[in-house]
Length: 311
Ligand code: ADP
Ligand code: MG
Image (cartoon, rainbow, N blue to C red; front, side, top):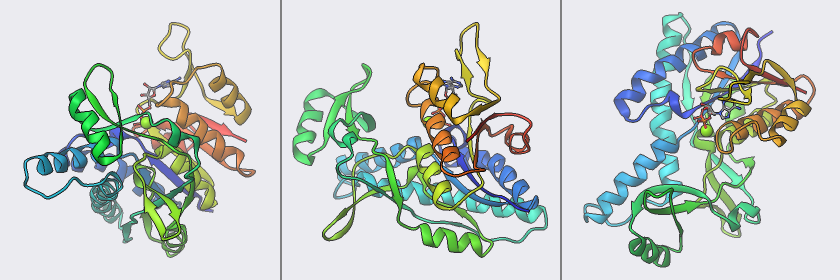
C-alpha cells in the first residue's frame, strides 16, 4: 500500500543562482521519482531564504536606480520565489519520472499560509531579510515604509521580520484534489506566503514562516503518513560537533522534546526541524517523521538511516 509522504527540502538543495539550482534540483527529482515509482504519493515543499532574498535585492536595486517605480513588497517576492523554484522542480521531476516510464503532471501551487495577527512573534521581529544599509538610510526607510530595521551581526543594517507560527493553508483543498488525482504537487514553498485575515479578505504580511513548521502543518492537514525533512546532515545529534557527539537513530516525541529542552539543537537550524518532526509525529497515531540528508533520502525512507521520530 502506497504511503502519502510530505518532503521538506532544505536550502542547500537549491543553490545560489538559476544555473546552479537547475543542476542541483536533479538530485531532488531523482529522490521524488524513486518514491513515486515505489507507489507512494509525494508532496514537496522547500525553503526559499536565499532565493527570496535575491529577488527582493534585485528589485530593490532596480527601484533605487529608477529602472522600476517602486520596491517589490516582501510577500510578493515570496510568491515569485515559489514560482521560480517550483518551475525548476516541475521540469526536473517530470523528466526523472519520464526516464522511469512514468507519465505524471508535476504542478506547483502558489500557496498562502495563514498566520495569526496576535502571534507574539509580531511583537519582536528577528529575521533579517533583504539589502544591507547604513544606519541613517535604514532608519529613514523604517520611517517611510513602516518597517523594522536592526543591525545584522556587524554587517550592516537590514529589515527584520517576524517568524509567526503557521496556522492554516489556504489552498489546502486544491493541493488535496491534485494529489488525489495522481499529480505530483509542490506547495507551501518557503513556508508559504504569510497572510492574515482582515475585514477585506486575506492580506500578505512582511514575515517569514519556518519551512519545516509549514511542512509539518501541511503533512498534518493532508493526513500524510510520513514527514521527511531533508537537510545537510544525515542525522540529528546530541552534543553536535563536540567530541562526545552521538547521532540519533530512533527517538520518541518525548525524547525529542526533552533533548530540545536540554539545548542539543541549534536555534534557527536543527531546532525547528525537531519541533516540526515532533509536532507531526504527535499529531495522530502511526505518523512518523524523518530527518536525513538529500543524499541518503532513499535509504532513510526505507528505514536504513536518518533520525526517525515516532509518537
Ligand atoms: P536547511 O536549509 O535544510 O533548513 P539548516 O542549516 O537550517 O538547513 O539546518 C541544518 C543544520 O543544522 C545542519 O547542517 C547542522 O549544521 C545544524 N545542526 C545544529 N544542531 C544540530 C544537531 N544537534 N544535530 C545535527 N545538526 C545540527
Ligand atoms: Mg533551515
